[in-house]
Length: 273
Ligand SMILES: [Fe+2]
Image (cartoon, rainbow, N blue to C red; front, side, top):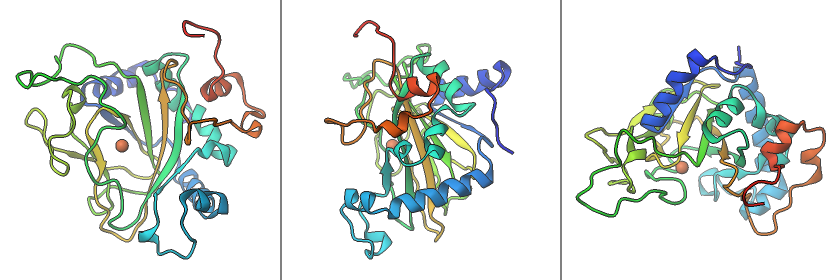
C-alpha cells in the first residue's frame, strides 16, 4: 500500500517538529514496493543509456566499482514516472508547508551505492548557510527555528534496514551546529553521535541539507538505491546541472498541470521579478 493523500494535520505536526529539531525525519510507506521496483528498473535503464553514460564519461564495460559518479541527475527529463513524483502526495504538500506555496524542484536524481562505494563522509550539502565563527559559541540557540531554504526528500527504493546495506546516517540536531562536521566518520553534536535511518523500500526521510549526514558504507552485495528530489524556496534559483544555459526540454512540460508547472519553475512575478 502506498500513501497518496496529504498527511492529516495531526500526523504532520510531529513529523515537522522532529524535522525542524533534528534535521531529518522518516515517513514510512509512502511508495509501494511495486512502485519502487518499477522505478529501480527504469533507473537501471537510464543509467545504461548512452546519453547518461557519456555524461558520466565512463565505458559500459567498466567494472561497476570503477564507474565514476554514482548519481544520475534530472530524472524528470527521462520519464513521466519520475516527473510526476515531484507532485506526489504527501511529498509535495509537505514541501509546500516547509518551503512555502511557491516552492519548486531544484534537483531530482537517484544514487546507486554498490559495495563499498558511496558518499561515505559526513558532510552538509553545498554551503554552510549560517556559520558560527566564534569558537566560544557552541551552537545556534535551540529556541530559534533554523530557516530551511531547501529540503531533500530521500526515498528508499530498496530495503536499507540494516547497517550492512549502507543506510543513511545523520547527527540529530547538527543543523543547529553552525559548523561543518567535526569528524568525517564519527562526528558528534551535543553529546550525540550519528544514528542510522533504517528504511524499507517505499519509506522516505526529509533532510535539511545543513544536517551532518552521509551514506554508511554498503558492505553487502545488494545495491542501495536512494532516490532524491530536492525542493527550494522560490528565491532559490533552479539550478539544474550543468547549470549554465540549461534549457528544460518541452516534453517535460507536456500535459503538466499548474502545480507541476510551478514545481518545474513557472511562477508569478514577485519581489525579484
Ligand atoms: Fe548529501
